[in-house]
Image (cartoon, rainbow, N blue to C red; front, side, top):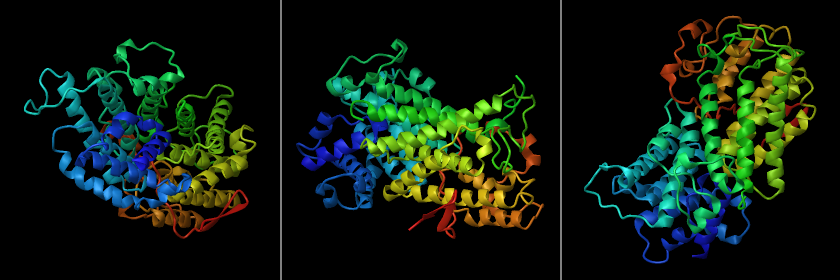
Length: 502
């Protein structure tokens, strides 16, 4: 039982966005006869925390089985449970397995687990509030006060995962804030209310401003904004019609998450309008590849945009560094992607300092922070390896641009769409050959289009097709987590400093 309590504490500490496991109710599942679905939940939890063994003190972690054995055990039980009467523990198990599969780069399984968990949660919720439930033959026990609060927290955990995991596909989200309101899901529980019970309130009763006591509710709002920003960026951002026309336990971890989400949104929105491949001595300016902005920017607009962009990248890097120094190991996929995005921008600032308008004087220092974080991250999750390799290849390209100015003078992101795609997507596709073909073509001065193979038809968009682009056909958020890398690059230079990849 001691191991179960420790495992629960680690999960609640390291995954604040999944604030759905109540210590007392969770422990009761294992005090008496342990039913199969409860075992599936425990196995999923152990699979997730075992991946972070290198950051957790205590010999008890070393006594656990490998993560995949727990995950396989949990999958086996859930394959039968998912078609049975809806239970909140089954939903929670699916959500935790989503995190696990996400971290080990098995995106298909992660996406399916998330979808199953949401559907079961919707079925369970319908038995509570719908005049006629989905299946009136199912007799679902009415929950007590604490159990109701746990169900609400689990529903919001579904919402948060939906905001993130579906950003890695061309599919729409299953849950929107409008749907949560329509379904009469109560407000996310405050910290003390989740632990000790409270009278749940409707979303319509919310009063601003919220305090740190409502940190989970603030996180929910942050992920809603995050999902909308990513939807804009990954639906080709400014390429959409009309966009360029001239018209910790006490809340510390939640506080860190809120700040990471804010600065990452600022970063992604501003980055969309900056040149993917600027000239070596160019200063801040708008896009250099179509579609171009139709109106002239106001005075100092691009300098102010550069300030927001590169200061946001610096903030993300320092937040993650400071969190680590405070003993908070932010080694889960969401902060990981924030760290990767900031690292990519700081690399950009190192190679093209004029683009920063002087607002990133410590870009090299922030780049080193980001690389140190990603090297730690990959000890736990395979995603980190792909991010580091993407940074390596971007560094190779940026160095060649600076050393061969004339050869790259007329190149843009359309010539390196594979790398641009890799900086935005969570996939298991290895596009190394296509990317290297593009670089070789650029080095040879080949002005014609480069054949990168059939698998890249979705990644490389001919500029002539932009007029026919239909964002409605891409209702879902595009890919979020980059896994593209080049296995041929194992020792690359970052701003004059060599990073050895073991």
